[in-house]
Image: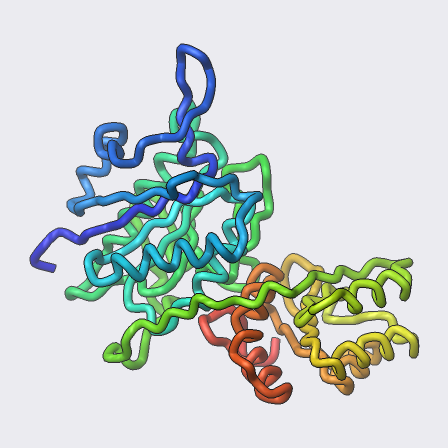
Length: 347
């Protein structure tokens, strides 16, 4: 590039944006317009940095689809003006948010890097500075005038992941996130090393960005456990206006095979409710039809979630439910990888 990459920081809220007032020991919101003054190391990256913050920063626990749209609209407003985005959010719901953004943006040609921290930016042992500095470095990385990354990613504690492959695994450790079914896209050590073969490439760079701002949030997560009653399952599936269910099953996608349980699921599917089978396991995925206990799920039209994460399954449901697809098309499209969120081939 002949000019410095322009990076936009978007702060929505979360621990990374807090700084301690040493007179009162209270935490207050950090002013990201002064980011260079507070973190002068950013000047070594040879990029220009702008920032925009939510008018009222929110705790990650308060995240919802309205805020997803707010983030997307900021990206839309600045998309032609900057070369990359770093989005700072609370880590507790970051995988949900980042996964949703990946589906809301089609034909993305620029990097969008989500990051945050376990400790506030002003704490003595904070992880915030390293996460922020390296995220900006990744967002500004170009090769032959083309961004190295052109997808939605999540950077935390020396690893860059495809965002819709991530899950938060620790509330205590700095290594807060994992991507159990897909390797890191980059690793930061003495050198920042990109795993080029894993990075998603657009086949047609002439296609313009498509932004979808409508999500259907009438979905629920139904986690099975030994002893769960049919009354509970029926109550959940009879929720008013319910349109989608992420069914967390055992192992490779197994469930009870009682006639009543299967009948409850079948009635829900016949009413138009989309049910996606995902595993409760931290790694691996479902293999519909491998065992007798999942053969009937396949027969009644339960959707194969393969190795998709729970967070990404929720986001993909919200996205596809607004596309007004036929039952067959919905199933076929969900079972295909749209943004690199699942492995298409058999596990």
